[in-house]
Amino acid sequence: MSNAAHRVLWTVVALALVAAGGVGLALSLGGFPGVEPDGPLAGAGLRRAWRLAAPWGALAAVVAGLLAALGGLWLIGRELRGGGALRGVLTHRDGRRGRTRLPAAVLARALERDLTGDPRVRRARVVLTGEPPGPDLWIRMDIAAGARTAGLRDHVATAIRRYVDTTGCRPAHLDVTARIDSGRA
Image 1 (tube, rainbow, N blue to C red):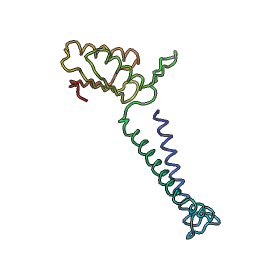
Image 2: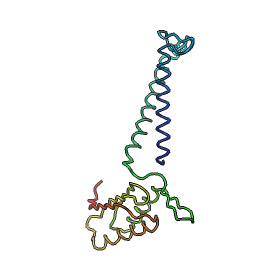
Image 3: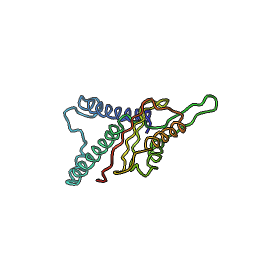
Image 4: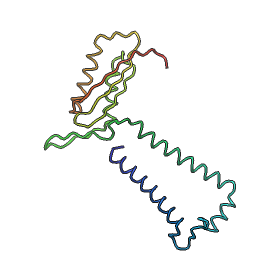
């Protein structure tokens, strides 16, 4: 999801919460005709239906509340998990010839596949952060235990060079971390 989509999503959530709070305040102050500030919020028909649905009505309310809470936790977790990673689409303008749009996640996965093309590299994780003209590139690789590391630096440099040629963006900051994979989970 792009940054603009995230802003729209959180704006809609904030407006919905403010509207619910405003309606609750107006109800408690008697702002709606026919609603007494000290009277019950639900009408007689709704209260009667609630009593008839006992205990299933309360159970349904609890389940709905838990689902809403889990949905909120998932949404906040997605936001926090991003860690500033470049999301959405990397756009490269090329003068009057037009522009190229590449999803940032696809670029990261492509670089991961390129890095793991060498049998010595068991896993690779790539994160793009910063602005598209010169994003920061964070790479973490797990190297097979006992593998010879001679030439591995050249393999990584070649993969990064292919990334730069593909995207047209030179990383402003490059951080490569290589760890020896012990083979344990």
